[in-house]
Image 1: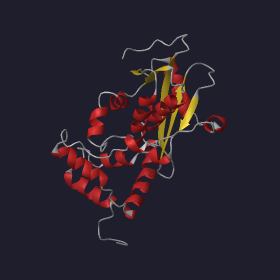
Image 2 (image 1 turned 90 degrees about the horizontal axis):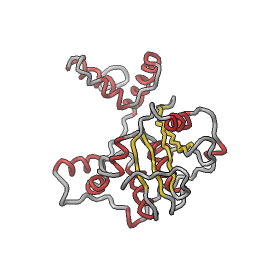
Image 3 (image 1 turned 30 degrees about the vertical axis):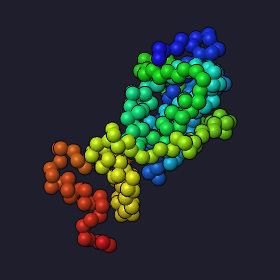
Image 4 (image 1 turned 180 degrees about the vertical axis):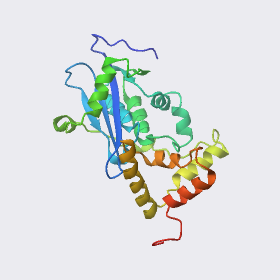
Length: 253
């Protein structure tokens, strides 16, 4: 579909999507999204993301969902966002992600809900990538998502529904389009490994020490990737990996 020119047209709206993500002092993911229509527009919102759905792009995904849920069904929406990955997951990769059972799709619950809501709308919805550093509106929506000031009055009105109708709750893989690799990934994703308490404690200690040195809180993924850096010898990497799991038989082993 072609981009929608929404200036001055009540049946077409341009909405800018922003997001923020950080790790709190307890090591939990915290995400916020934001939608921005225009300066001083009462529809501008900061959208809190449920903790269980928080991720790097969870804020932007939640903001898109709130935008299409809150806008009238007959109004066409032109959504401006920064994430190329999120656009692909909602457009060109949507069928592929569905066929693979959403096994390796980040924010799959939110994306599936967006797809369902869009099917029920009676107007067009377009997505366009915009560079946040060069667009004033994108800067405004980013500031709204990253604000540390309490927005109780705004956030009390935000009701993010992620309930997927039973008819759309399909978690199986499509055998015709699947491969051995995709099947293996899907099975692996379904098997949730039990969390090791000792590993959790070491990650928290590492995160706290790294924050003092780097000035920011690292994610678990960043910590694990740092152990695989090629500047570190294989022997040292094995040693650090075992230390993170407290696998050496010393102390209170």
